Amino acid sequence: MSNILIVDDELKIREIIKKYAEFEGHTVTEASGGLQAVNICREREFDIIILDIMMPDLDGFSVCREIRKNSSTPVIMLSARGEEYDRIHGFEVGVDDYVVKPFSPKELMMRIAAIIKRSSKSDSDMVKIGGLCIDFTGRMVTIDGKNINMTPKEYDLLFYLVKNRGIALTREKLISNVWGYDFYGDDRTLDTHIKLLRKNLGEYSSNIVTLRGVGYRFEASANQT
Image (cartoon, rainbow, N blue to C red):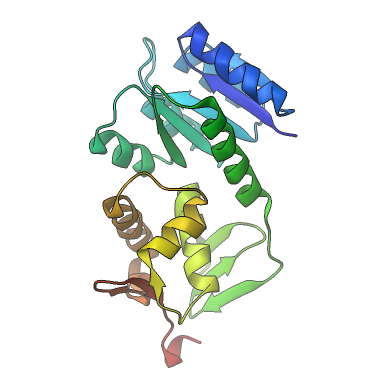
C-alpha cells in the first residue's frame, strides 16, 4: 500500500488517522509539528501527507510551501476552520484536498484512496500545442523548453482539460473527475484553480475557454497544432 505522513500537534487526531490508515494497509509516520515534518520530508519520500493547518511552531501553509520546493507529494490539509480563505490559500500553496475537523475517518480514507489512485495513473502519450508541451507520463509541462512549475492539482486539471480538448466540460464534470470524490466546496474553488492555471500558462492561457453558465473547454487553434 502507501506510505503516509500524518502531521498534527494533537496526539488524539494522529492516533485516529493512524488506526484507520493502518487498517487499510498503509504504513504511517507521525510528526507532531511543522518543523519536524519538513525535516522528515527532506530525508524521506511519502505517497501522501495529511497536514494540519494550526500548529505551534510552523503552520500547515508554510510546511506545504516548503515541501513543494522539492516534492509534488499529494497533501490533504486538515483544519478546525472552514473559511473559504483557508481553502483557497491552501490550494494556492499546493494542497490537493481540504478536510474540516471534525471529520469522518472513513471519508478521509476514501479521499486518500482517490488521490493515490489518481497519482498512480500514467499515460504514455505527450501533447504538443505550439511551444506548449504536456508530458502526461513525466507529469511535466514546458513552454518553449522551459519547465513550468505548478501545484499537483493544477497538473491534474490541465491534464484532464487537454485529454478532453475540444469538448465542453461542465463544472460538475470537472470537479467530479479532477477531484475524484463528492466535492463539498463550491464553484469558486474550481474558478480559482482555473485562474492560477491560466497564470502559469502565460501566452497559452487563452486556450482555456470559459463557457458561461456551463464550464470550460480546452482548445487549440489551427496555427498551434
